[in-house]
Image (tube, rainbow, N blue to C red; front, side):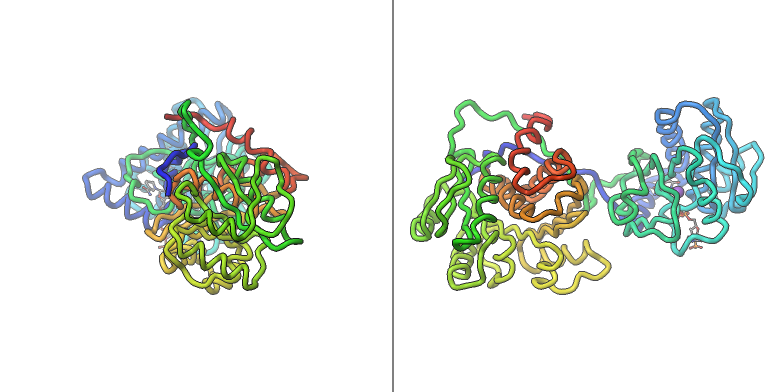
Length: 470
Ligand SMILES: NC(=O)C1=CN([C@@H]2O[C@H](COP(=O)(O)OP(=O)(O)OC[C@H]3O[C@@H](n4cnc5c(N)ncnc54)[C@H](OP(=O)(O)O)[C@@H]3O)[C@@H](O)[C@H]2O)[C@@H](O)CC1
Ligand SMILES: [K+]
């Protein structure tokens, strides 16, 4: 493999916690001597700062639950009042935890019952946070329904009714315009219904250490300034094993995407007769096999258009037994013989994943992690939220994407992008994460009407939009 000459670098990304890990992190901080009340005060102060930036001034109704989320709510009410807002509080009942009761006692204004509370210009939803354990009760649901469409909605930690572990909605949560998440984003902000219902998410640092988080959001990659002495092989050489004649379109898309994603040299190997660009070389299967021994080869992309026949199986066995990194998709996934030595990225959609690894079940993240640990490959499960897991347990979720990426050939393009990044020496987990982010960004730029053939052409604009680092 070539040493890293990658155009991009990618950070670990923001932590995504489930409620249990969040509670553990919070308890660790309490164990280090920070009282729970202090954490709640920090949370409330951070929410007040965020609200003042987002909605400077106006009438406010704070809906407080009985747990700690409600405790944050009382703190927000008091803080906004000091800042000059006209604040009302409506509560589900007396606070049940000590810090929440202390916060409630600091609110000197009246407390209205939830039923009957009239909306305000700014509605602060502090009914339930990460402690939601069952469906929304009727009275809470009714007040949320009454608020809908009447004001700017600020969710405290997470919109009430969203399961912070899964993003699933119980009942009808009130969609937030802004969510102030404490300590870290929760999985529920990124997954399922929770993603849209969270609106814009601001992460408030309340002094809880989440550095150990194993699940993270895919961040935007950063472009490295390329050394002036760059030559084409140092920018990465990708071999795309094409499908049979007549099914070559998919491989051509993969090759074009690899070239646009920054590979210096792209070779299409197979029986086809047309390269998608003059810059792409074309070689026979025999010539391709000889190339596998060339130390300059950085990655192999295999699968798009590949038929389940002797040629396909031979190619797959050959590249998996080598030590050049491989990205395998589509046809390659249907006939994977097992896992060889080559560093490997697998990019299944749901159907391919199920055929390879078995049923997914409700814990999608767990399923992808188990697949990666069991196979030794980086596994990237494509979907509205793409989940990427490394065999070592690191897991990432990409939500930087657009629905119009669900179009024929889009996966072939992703394969090419990841191939290019692998060829530049990026580690498989990083290549997969950066690749899916770039692909998603191209989709967002393309908008409705996007077809897969457009995506490679959008990549220069995607790169131009990235921050430049060292
Ligand atoms: N993490 C951090 O560092 C910090 C977190 N902070 C804040 O704490 C929040 C978590 O607080 P929390 O654990 O008290 O839970 P919360 O969401 O208020 O629920 C209240 C209680 O209601 C109950 N209950 C559940 N579902 C129900 C239902 N459908 N209908 C009726 N009842 C239901 C359930 O009790 P149960 O009856 O199940 O025993 C639950 O305990 C978090 O989101 C953040 O805002 C910050 O203050 C400080 C730093
Ligand atoms: K809430």
